[in-house]
Length: 205
Picture 1: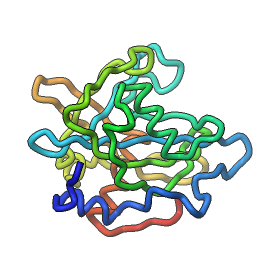
Picture 2: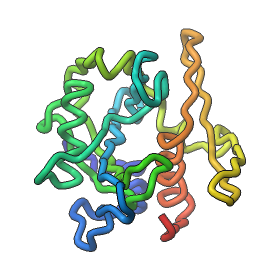
Picture 3: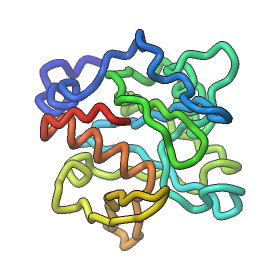
Picture 4: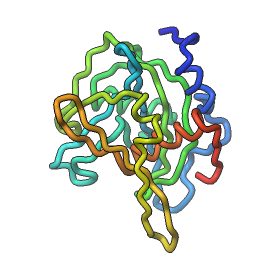
């Protein structure tokens, strides 16, 4: 898959870090923390779209939330290998259908995870087969919607003795289905927007 001349992909690449992690920034930073990775999958269907999943209401944690494919590292894996494995397990997209563009800085999630997000292009012909134990639904949201600041709804939260600003991205599909993109998923999207569209490269992650 060659999208080198695509101006949107070029813009995203300007905000991404190299695939390889040479500074150990994905390593755990506190006791009890675990490493995890997610993939933001992009697919071109007349326009660029982001593939997202909705977790089942029966999940013991984050039930019903919108999420990227991803999860915990297994022994011996690199951060990218985790993202690719979890993507195949959750939505059936095999490694050969994914072209990784780069990554965003690793960060400490509010849960006990040190998360590394990757961004990749999915072959539009690849079949998506959700694992219904982990995924209730798969849907696609236009990248243009997610990168539009008019769709970033600020929400201020106080925890850990500090004020924090988050951004929700409520999305209504053409059939009337409402999706609330929030939490860690929206934060990763917003950081991509900051870096690729605003040239804001925060280092305190």
